[in-house]
Every structure is written in C-alpha cells, then in structure tokens.
Image (cartoon, rainbow, N blue to C red; front, top):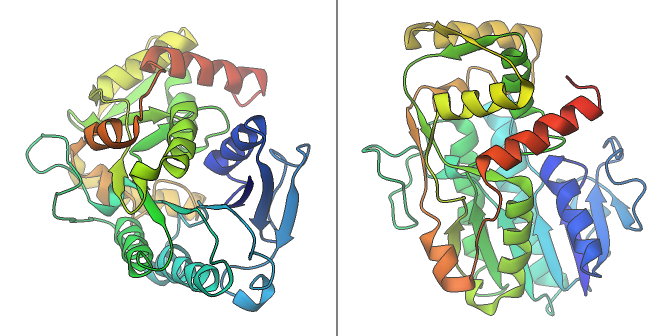
Length: 320
C-alpha cells in the first residue's frame, strides 16, 4: 500500500512514518525544502519537496496514493491569518488536487484537534455531537480545516480525528513542563482537567481509522479515556524525574502577561497570546467512545508508563 504523509518531519508525523514502514507501507513524505528531517532521514522513504500553498509544485505527483495522512499545519503562530492559511486553506488546496488527480484513493485522514471543538463547559468530556466553540485562533483554524474536509466528503473518502494533548518522545510542547518540574517548580493556576494520549496510541489510532471502512466519513475523538488533573500530570513527571516540586500559584489574570513575555523570548513557543486562551479554561476533556465502538480504537499506554518513557527519552537525548 502506498501512503503520502504531510507534516512527516514533525513530532507526530515522524512517529507515524515509522509505524507505517513497520506495517510494510511504501511511504512518501510531502515536506518543505526547509524542513528539518532529522527524525526521518534514516528511513527508507521517498520525498516530495514542495509548499502546500503551491499546488502546481505537487499536483502531478500525488495521483497514485492509497492513503493520504494530512498532519501538516501550524500549532504555534502569532498571526490569525497564518493559522487559517496553514490549517484550513492548505487543507482545501490539497483536497482539491486529490479530488482532481487521485480517484482511487482509499482514505484521506485529517488530523484535527480537541481545540477545534473547545473545552468542556460543564466538566463532562465533550463528544462528537457537541457544538464546536473553539476559544483560540488555532482551534478555529482547525475547525475551518475540518469543514474544508467535509466539503469533499462526497468525492473523496475522508476521516477526521480529534486528539487531545499528545505526549511522548520528540515532543517539544510537553517538554516545557518536564523542564520546569526538573527545576523543582510546579506552576499552578487552579485545578484543571485534561484528556491525554501517548504518541504510540495516537499513531495506532490514525492507521486503524484509515484501514477500517467503518471510520470512513466520520469524525472521532481519540484519547486514553482517563481524566487527569494538572496535579496528576505534574506528579507523574516529578516521579519520573525523581524530583520534589514546589507549587507556585499563579492567578489566571496574569496569564496574558506571561504569554506576552513568552512571545518576546520565543515567537513560536507554545505559550503565546493565542494559545494562552486555551490554558484559561479548566476542562479540556473528550470522550473516545465513538472511535472505540465504530472502528475498534483502544489505548494501551498508561500515563505513568508514557511519562516514564518520555522522561527517559529526554534524558538519553540530553534534552534534560
């Protein structure tokens, strides 16, 4: 089977490429010429170097793939325009080319996010029938990407996946928390609840959803079906690192200031004036029951296992 992966150089994409190869897929990665390929350059894969915004650079090269896994997009940006261009407009461009050039495609997988729907407003994990209410430009742009995908639903077999926060080796977002806790600090702005998913479980879910006919045309949340407080997560990280932490309570009112300062230091960091809107809400939880029922998704990695393996990887690679 032939698979095309966008966003292959990133955290999730690189793990997906590895998993596809192990399953004997012939993998081609659609990447920018400026992409850092360090996680995948040793693999037996092909490349299409192009820009998704320039359809002419790839339109005649993607006509014979059985599966397209569209993971490319922006998770960090300051400009609303940049978010929508990358996460919605490029998705529509890619689908238009596939619709025109690849009539034999078996599935187009769009990796969206819980952020496209927004937080739970009552503490109950959100389900697929919830009215979307994204609270950040990032979330709104992923929702716009979903809607672009659904425009092609009758011409191309599609599946939309909405994971919550994902963690594991190579991740740079959760790494920030590992780094802070290594210094003995646990920043806290009140009790928060989260759904999570370890990278291996997410990748298995992505591939399963592509291969299962039951997932065609559907939109699904993926998670490990547990709800974790910020103290649960910090506690597991501290335990994996062998650290005791000192809790520093931060009022929510200063979070925009923290984000602004973070932007000055790292313009594309996860803490910025857009993504801090997500952190302002206490319940980011979702229900993966539909994915379990309709195409057999399941998670196997516990938070303790996943955090320990992630911490070990950071240590081995001298990130910590």
